[in-house]
Amino acid sequence: MNLKKYQQIGLSVLSALLLISIFPVLDLEFLAWVTFVPLFFAIKDSRPTRAFWLGYLSGVIGFTGILYWITHAITHYGKLPAAVGFLAWPLAVIALSSLVAILALFTGTFTLLTRWLHLRLRLPFVLTAPFLWVTLEYVRSFFLSGFPWASLGYSQYLNLPLIQIAELTGVYGISFEIILVNAALCQFINGFLSLPRKLHLIESIVAGGCLLLTVSFGSWRLQELNTILPIFPRLRVGLTQGNIEQDQKWNEHSREETINIYESLTRDAAKTGVDLVIWPETAAPFYFQANERYRPRILNTATENKTYLLFGSPGYRYKDRKMRYFNSAFLVSPGGKVLGQYDKIHLVPFGEYVPIPLKWFLPIIKRWVEGIGGFSAGKEETILAIPKARFGVLICYEIIFPALARKFVKKGANFLVTITNDAWFGRTSAPYQHLSMVTLRAVENRTGIARAANTGITALIEPTGKISSATKIFTRDWLTGEVKVRVKQTFYTRFGDIFAWLCTLVSTVFIVMALFKRKK
Image (cartoon, rainbow, N blue to C red):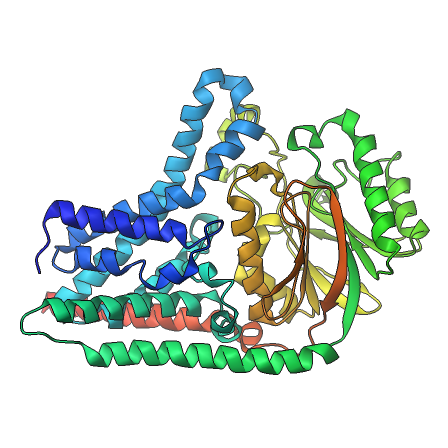
């Protein structure tokens, strides 16, 4: 079946629309299993260069639909509108388009290599596509500082039996499974449409068998975990969601109200009997270490409520005769003593720092972008401790990086805390997308996770990936609950992204074989 150009384009667009639908807030995750079938049909008879452009087109539309909220964050909460007026929207669109243009390169490269390997080595998509996809998705997690937002496996965060495989493979194993099934389904359908009919039964059986094994493993692990989780050590935590308006958060005149809000929420949560109360990212919007007015009040909050208190605040350290500033989290004891400070390691480009090539334009960029603090990156995965457990803190954006979360657990954290401020996103799909990625960190390391957000969405996540309780977005609230304390490291915690490395190795072997054959 040879498709015309406009039919190929239509199929590429269809895959992009399906891709958008499988992520929050639509959450039509069952469509993931057919999302790439149209794209595979679009490229199956095309030249590799055309396959690239078809994949690139699909990537541009798909990532635009997933990341549209970037324009909202820039135009509603940044300084751009005040600085450039009516040009704010065009510049925000340019910023989104630039990011999408880069991300779409991964989709285009995927379709190019898949088609090229088929032509050079006569290898079916079902054999090459899953390895290539995982390789490129893994590269996207660290290329240009990394942006693994909306990796394909995250679409299945509500499918608990399926995602349990992440304790072995990380999120990449789920992405592999989805692409494998899509490729096999494409070939199966193509068998019916071809003359003579070839049903590609072997590929279909292999893909179906892998999916069945994955779900069976997940169901077995869920049953086992539901049996042993009740005897896991646990501690009670209180999570606060202040819902401070983003345009008021850094206003000096709003600090008194902000501290009053968190003091009140802490008292309410502490009354239920908790071991630890958690405030969100930069809940204290000033330099806690040096603020003579509010520092004593925060210390006294922990003392009055007889609880450990973790909160976000800008921090600083003096090193090598230079003052460095950080996005930090501080732990305070019930006795009012500061027990530790974690400095955010993976900073947000243009939000917390300006990449080195653009340092010369720092004064101009700071005029346009709210929140750039010239922060330095932390150097150590600091483990904080209370009597019942040790834990690691991931601040906002850091939770989307599997390798970083794993380092905390491997270093001795019994559970994870993530603090964030998702008010930047407004009432878009971004807060829900952000939360969906947290669930995979819980499964990968089999640890409970406590998530405190300024707004959208404060939650407790079980080691199975189940969201056990959550607040609503844009509400002032608090919740308490139990966090399961990890007692044993998973395969993923011990060995990391070995599955992604193996996929990269297999992809490299395929490419070298194709190059060698071409030279010959």
